[in-house]
Image 1: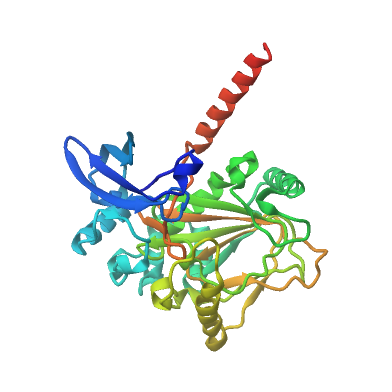
Image 2: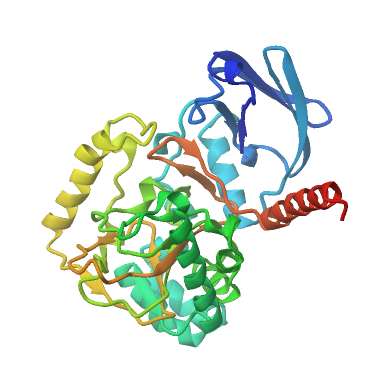
Length: 400
């Protein structure tokens, strides 16, 4: 859990200040202090491993210079994944507080007993047992077996036609008004679309996708983000694990939805089958600092170069993915994938993607060193409440 220090004062925002937090239950549990500069958002936070706390209510007391306050939180780390994480953190003596960058080196990833069933050496036998017990429906056995062997699978006719139309309309509006800095013809992603458009919120809660991923993971999952794409990204082959990082490893997957029939030369998705069995490239492996202020040049020279070497030396021929409208692609967090070149700039590649983490896992972003965040189920309710209040104030001012 991350506690971020912010200020509305432009003068104070640029000044270093000692930022302290204390976790209190019936008594003080622990406290720490970190010198931060509030307007440097990438570093002006303190995080703590909530898995090391018992489930229940806590008060977070904070102070910075002459300011201070408190907030109430509830810790609810439930299920086997959370229990395994807690046990591993305690065993490895991982500290409660985290004041430096999140990094894969903090966690021990060599315990095969806590990884998901599909990442174990006997995964095919485990799938046999899951099908026999009814925990995996018979119609999902073949797609799941492909996931074991290749790291991805497709479900056709997955997305409701009405929702596809709503998503396409929302992206058209977002492009027209320049959301996320989008310019016509660009490969720019449309970020955090669920905040503004109901259809993208509905994608994050789409029952068929949620049920499918929960069945794959065999634990409940939650969505981290949703991104819209009008055109192909042309992104170089990469693994998601360094950007959307999780402990234990394996408990994240991507869900890519085709909003139109994907045409040749549109910048189609490329998939390297079986690459989910390759070791992930992480920042500690590359020996480079975290990415700050969107400066990715060092990352490109090292991490992206290593990915390119892995892909070229593997001998694996990438699959060019051209799904039909409404199809769903699920991929493993370590699957090497990317965007092919947009040879025909008149063609779009309308799609959206959500990223899903197992509940009870630790979520962070290894490339930037930031703690992770999921889309809370009541987030829309809070946003609508603020919108309603603003509308009421506006009505009152107009005498309505």
